[in-house]
Length: 135
Image 1 (cartoon, rainbow, N blue to C red):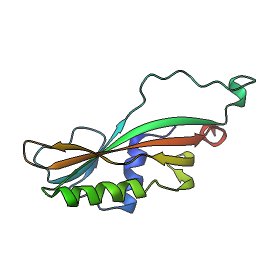
Image 2: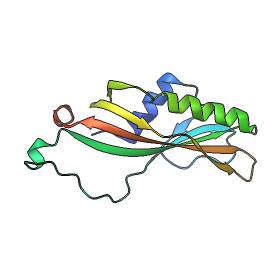
Image 3: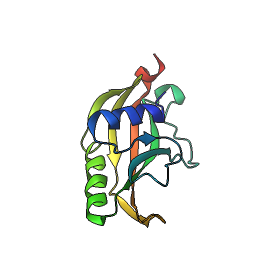
Image 4: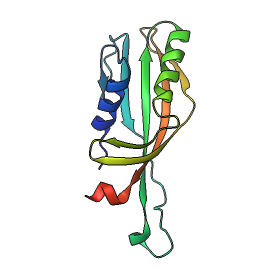
């Protein structure tokens, strides 16, 4: 099963995460940090013809919060960099999961904090091979 902490490790191995990366609350005093959050809203369960035994992948949705500096351009550049970590990537092992492919969406600016730190959200859908996930 793919954990948010596995995604954090993946991001940290590929990009500068400033003062840190977390799956919890970002410290408001931090000027540059990243948060990874579950975004699995209640969706209709997906069922293939032939039943559950024929499902080949599961889908996990996450949101990556880029809390990055007092410059809008700098925050946007970092959000684009994070999106690129997932764009066009396939056949990757993260933790104990085999990722078939990622579908990142465009980063969305959500404004800035009381400390004037700009924030972007990068939504990502992750498709995980079921066969290897069960091993």
